[in-house]
Length: 499
Ligand SMILES: [Zn+2]
Image 1 (cartoon, rainbow, N blue to C red):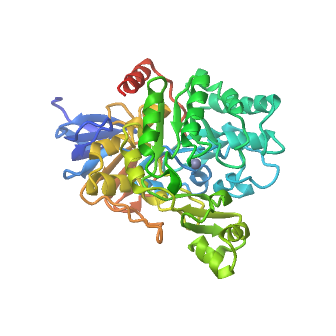
Image 2: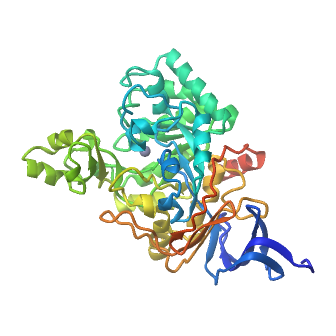
Image 3: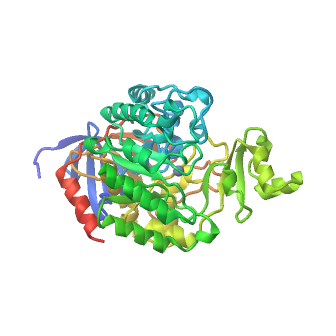
């Protein structure tokens, strides 16, 4: 203990500190200086420009949203209210095979790249141009980025309904390598979508080869989440082994009523693979999914809510079966007339959601769709829903484990250096919340609602959100892939062998 007072920019006094590692909370003061954690402990001899009395509320590392489609949103709406209001301080963009860069369009963006915006939103022919645009926009949150396989395919192929030729894959690889050199975190695929479904396993495996040397990873919205899900998981493992990189299965779920109850089997597959290679997954805490309207999923066995439709915007918010009845046509015909459109699919079982969310390998990712006029509530509610509804009210997992799934697990997996844990010298991305009141308020009917119980959020040491209101400070920036280090790799190996 120093005898003379130390000075900080911000002192957070009397917090229950959840350090991000899953350790139980301990009462601590935390000092922040120059964007970093300056000290942790009993800091009663410290002075600070701003002192925040935590009064025993929870202080945690800022949440990392590993699964977003915020690529263009961080530039167009840099205040990022849907995320900062949840305590999210870093978003990872470029999931599901679709990224805003590197992209050169020949016409309108193919489905589902249209989730990121219309043609004029795609302005970044190189990844370096995208990084510059993110930093120029000064978003309120940090931004890490994956490169989308579908985006690369669309740059190099005249027709997406076939596998790429060797020459086309070579062109895609060159762009992927440019992006990796500028700090991209890895490659994502969206093999379930029509724009990538005809890609062969070999196409993806060959494209993924440069990832290992860069220390990057492979994430996948798998070829199917329905009955053949185990085959799709095996394909993902194969690609990871071929490229010798970690695999993240995106928004892991058992989709479709015939598949409900299979999460035990699916998680057994994941654990089996983890004996031989690093594999993880993310999920969002809801039993309904959302994307563009896919006619293959309009089978009549589940409810589907339309969230937007270009030819029929007046149908947003209605069930497709009601629209079909009103029009006197089949649901399939109604779906055709609504295209292009967005949808919420009532396609999971709650038991499966809970089993997958509570698995130790699962990270939290919102998969929110910020350009949707009636977005799935996960966009505004995913993180507080895990903390409030699932950890506190349903007692599904301890709060410190919920925090770990949003912080250290995510940062270690994706290579976000010195984030995801509260350590002296690390970046001061922090969230102060009330464990007794934290709660998602966004619903399917009213999805654009700020969560309760998120009291203060700091990004890179700057107070960016307080008591339900953004402060106006936007201190985020592009975050490049951190160097892999031997300690993190050894830890990942130990974690894998624990199963
Ligand atoms: Zn996806």
